[in-house]
Length: 333
Image: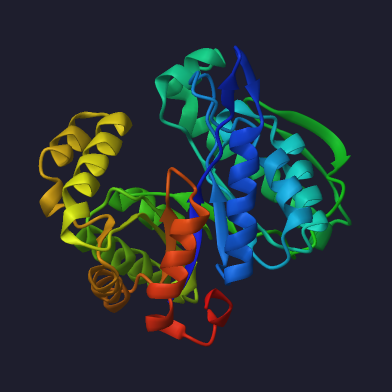
C-alpha cells in the first residue's frame, strides 16, 4: 500500500484583500508529504466559488515541482469542456518537463452547474466537448510517435491545421491519464480508453471494492494489463487519540458532508457513525480500515485533510504508515 494526498489550497482574506497565506501553508504541507515518502498529490481545481479555491492548478503544481523532489503531481481534475485542448496539452507537457516526468494528468467532464454557467458553456454539451478535447490532446502527443509531431484536426468545436504541440512531455508517449469515475459505465469507459481510475472520498468501502473489481474485470476483458497502481482512492483523514475526541470528529465529518451537498450526501451526514468512507478513528482503527481496503484491492490511498495540517500528516506517517511498509516511511520517525 502507498499513500498520497488529494485536495487543494485556499487563499485567505485579510483586511479585505486576498493573500497567499493559505497557499503557503498548503505548499509546506506538500513539501512535508514529499519528505515523508508520500507518492502522489492530486490537486483539485474549481472556479467562481467565492471561497478562494485553486482556480489554476497547473500554476501551483509548477511551483511545487521546484519545491519537491519525488512526489508525483496530479490534476484532479482539469475540466476539459472549458479549455482549449492544445493549450492544455502544452501546459501539461511543460509541467512534465519541469518536474522531471512527475505529472499525472487527471481530467473530467465537470458537474457543477455554476461553473458551466460562469463559462457560458451549456452543461449538456459536456460529454461531446470532453471527447473532442481529449481526442485533440492525444493526437498532439501521439503524433510525435507517428508523424514527427505535426497534425491537423477538424471537429465540431476545434480546428487546427498542421500544428505541433511543444514541448513534448518527458513521459512517453504522454503522462498517465486519470479519469474520475463512479458509475459502472464510466468505470468501464476508463478501462477501455486507457485511463487510470480516480475514486471519490464519499464512496463506502464496499462500493470502492466493487468499483475496483469492475475496472479490473474490464481491463482484463480488453487485454489491458492491470495492476493496483492504476487506481487511486481518496479517503478523508480524521485521526483521534481518545474517546473524548470522537464526538467532535463525527461533528466535523457531518459539517464536511453538509458542505459538499446534494441529497445523497445529506443522507450520509445523518448517519456518520455508520459511514465507512473516512479514515476516522484511532490509529488502530484506521489501520484496520486500511487493511480492509487493501484486501479489496485499494492499495493507493489519497489522504484528504481540508486543513492541510502538517502535524496531522506527521502523526499519520508515524502511527499508521509503518504498519504497511515501515522501511519506506522511515523518514517519518
